[in-house]
Amino acid sequence: DTTESKMVAVTNDQNGLEFTGWQRLTGDDYVFSMHSSKSILIKWQVIDITGRVTYSGSRQFNPGINSVTFNMAAAGSGTYYFRYGYPGRADPVVHVFCR
Image (cartoon, rainbow, N blue to C red):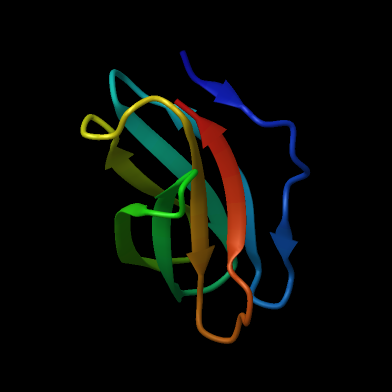
């Protein structure tokens, strides 16, 4: 089962990047969506509760709704963090999800 934490959505007004949510697609596929008001390169990571980076990547976002999709088949059940950042942002943004 997958559960979502009850967290407040974070809006990054400096760059017009807003986290719009996440969902489990099918099986072990997850998608995180964000709305961007301009083109921006983000770097993202999926981190387990011990701090180990299980997945990572970068993605060029264009204005509009953008998404990051990844497969968690190799990861076990537990609590994970989806962390992303972009040039000009000192601290990464973190969202929690459980698998």
